[in-house]
Length: 178
Picture 1: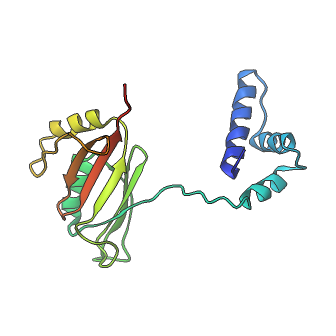
Picture 2: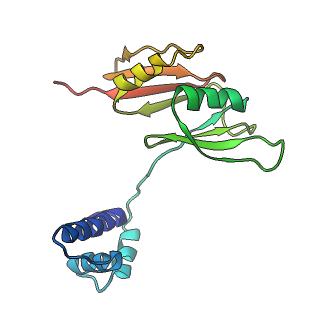
Picture 3: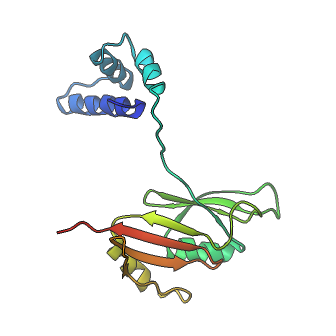
């Protein structure tokens, strides 16, 4: 076990394993059992030790993409790429939009705020299922983008699209040798 998240995953797996054997325990009880397995008096002591383990763990990065027209952005990101609007924020009526859209574990922030991001940026996105994604985009008949499926020199299949504001999204699926 290396991290706090590993310990929590162990507790969840323990609880699920016992549930399959018709032995129900609470979430708290599973945490306490994991702590005991590692020789700690309780979960709080184990959690404190793991929180100060000296390891650096990054969870994810969310790119901020500069936009200039909400309707065009939603047509592209929701309509064409298939993202769902998670939330949006404005400081008041007639203020710029800041919003999060997501699809299958990928989150993007769109901003009309000057200074939040540079127009014309490129976002490198790793994924699986790129062939199906390319077929999906090709079937939408979006007038402003006809992306191809390319094999890149770095060993990935890629689909590159440009949004209405000059930002480019480069979707990549690394290929494994057969």
